[in-house]
Length: 117
Ligand code: AMP
Ligand code: ZN
Image (cartoon, rainbow, N blue to C red; front, side):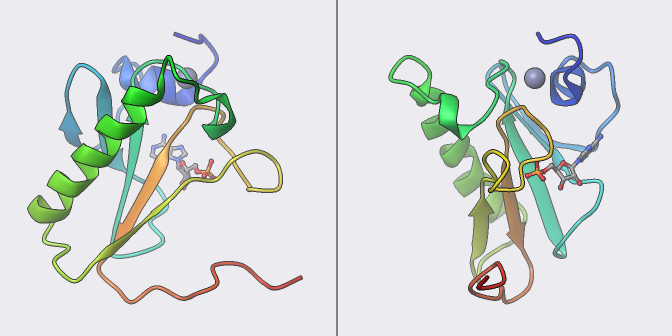
């Protein structure tokens, strides 16, 4: 655990969150500032700083996170679809330096998700 990482603290239960799913590997909880009717964050409990740090050694975590996302989509009744977003690094506008995937749904999304320039 990284002592100054807010998502490590959430994974350890040191900072409260509204959990929607948890197992030994992954935690899913509601985003504090929802950008859609359903906005859940999926994180590995182990600290990985960003998607740029995914390697052959840890990539099974990511596959598991997407399995959980598919299961949650059914539980959260996102029958009409959803979007999974990862913001990586400065240009990706990542604000929390612990790998996380945003799962957004309950409305029709816009595309592209950023201004052109
Ligand atoms: P990103 O900008 O991709 O790094 O996403 C970080 C996300 O974490 C943002 O959507 C924040 O609203 C969310 N967030 C930050 N702190 C918390 C928290 N304590 N509980 C739930 N969501 C949080
Ligand atoms: Zn962390």
